[in-house]
Image (cartoon, rainbow, N blue to C red):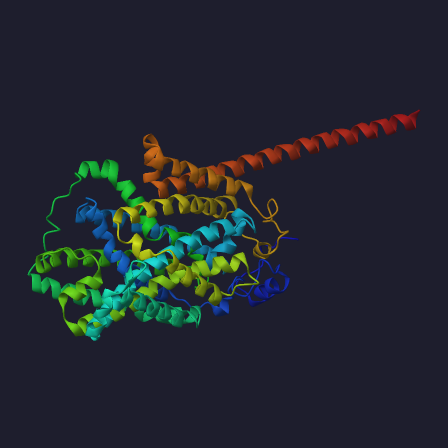
Length: 516
């Protein structure tokens, strides 16, 4: 097949050609490029998207987890700020793939991993997303459970019945939350865009009300901001800062850094998605983490215990109207992070695996169901378990991110032959559809990082898994591709030289024979 780098992937004609000519095992309407006429997301939609995704229940508990393991509030805040800024720029620049070509992440991954090999990073990314969806669902279900407990006192009697580690009323709350997600998803991405416009700011309002009430009632900001750290500042910056940032990234937006094209493919332009991210993500993060720390710190003086879950804070405030409204908005706002961050990706990933079997909505339902099978409420019981999971996420996603970025920005210089991404015999076919270089680099770098978990002398590799993975994936993949290209060019030059000499020899022989 002849590659086409000049065709406009934003045109309806290009999309129609891909749907008509693309191979059925690689193409369906959800995977085909989004035409410009269907791209309606402005910078405000991306800003509110990030407001909704940052202002979620897990991020509220995040700083508490860092403080529990020994960091001070200020150290935790420095880690969060640094991690947020790094991710903001990575997400903003990777978003260019979606806004320019209109393709989701699994299709983008075909350029670096091969049209078949792309299923490897896609399914790994999807598995991580499903895991996070389960964690977020559990935290949101706690808020829904609080709502029912406050509105219906008889609901509390269900606390005495439990199944697989969760109470009966919590199980009902999780089912209710599942249905809320399904109601939003059943109308597709356009409904998500509209939902984000108000859901993002709504959670900010609830947390602001909680903050105002607690600061007023406690008459101050509480002890955490003056409490000394168990880790000295010199030791913090020498040995804890970079691992802390790597851990933060693995637990926040390492996944979105990969699959951000799933969302930016709906942007009106690259500027819209880029500046929406540049404004929404860092601003919302800094304000939200500061508010969360203030609420928890002042709450220690007011409630005489540390409450890191906003649902627990609402319960302790004990104002029925605020608890009901706050819990409802918390649950709805969590949908605003869970769907774009943790359901959109696995939906496209399953779609990419079997385009003839899955649609976006069908894959989303499968992903939601799977997210409850592994019991996320058990993971959330132990911070050490959670942070071990986050390190392993960094070990897996870091190398993938480094490889796809190196391939797009360095090797291909931001140019893709879009039609070939949907053909098994196009320029991305590699070796039977698998790019053995990308797959080999991914396996090798991931193995090196995992070894660090079990071999103490190189434990720093594992502790800095996301950073090390991205850097090694980027550098090693780029170096191997350059070396292979150079070797191929030398072979071609030698072949051409040998071919020229052979032709000249034949001509000499023919001339000699003719003279004789």
